[in-house]
Length: 344
Image (tube, rainbow, N blue to C red; front, side, top):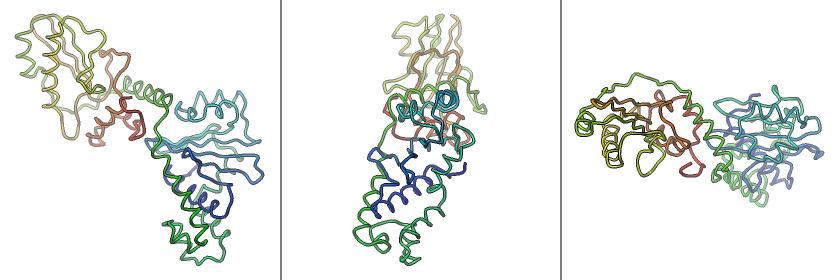
């Protein structure tokens, strides 16, 4: 199933919906919630699309020829990412017989491959040629150049040249609805599922390596001369606006010692941050009563840092945006660039 990127598919959907609005039809439309809806001519089936943050999109469909029974629902739960069917859980549980999602540069679906009924629903928006053909058949008297200009740069003037002033006004209103998706945040449920997926991949991630670091920097050596103790102190450097987040099983330091060590770690992190490779996300300092050792984790959530919360997506986005693509671990591709609750 080759539908292009979410932006490409959404643009075709917008053009077709604008054309239907201009012609006085609701067969293809943009809904007030920022999703697209396409109906079959007989009204027996429908297809919906919604764009999401992080270059994602979801398609879900109902049709008499698409099975929406328990077998489909079990396969959907097993194969589809949680964020894809959380969008309309009532439909996903009762009515949907086809679900497709775009992530990591490709489309996947349940069932796989896409059944004929689903491909039939997709046909009107599956290609630029299909959209252009519909516009030509709807306004056969339009000049080819005017039609081409309207499809490339649809605004009030180019649309009016094809369909007239009143119809163009209806088309422009529909095109405006297509921007609604960009202001929608992920739901709390979808945010929680996505965050848990990212954290799970962080736990499994290996360090990319290749960074220069000092085993025991001078700042830490100086601190240890004053604070000789047996202790374990672990921190997460992202996810809190007020400083480091301590691990749940830290032992051996009082509050004043922990604060002073955090100040040392903050200075070290600033000094060690590389313009391309970024900064460490977690650090562990262990004292044996005579000396201390420092361990850092740049690219994943290490087993030695224990917490029930973990870093927020907004903080991780900020961290990864400062890194060159080469230094972004695989889980960073899951991070949505916008539309998620701050601090989640």
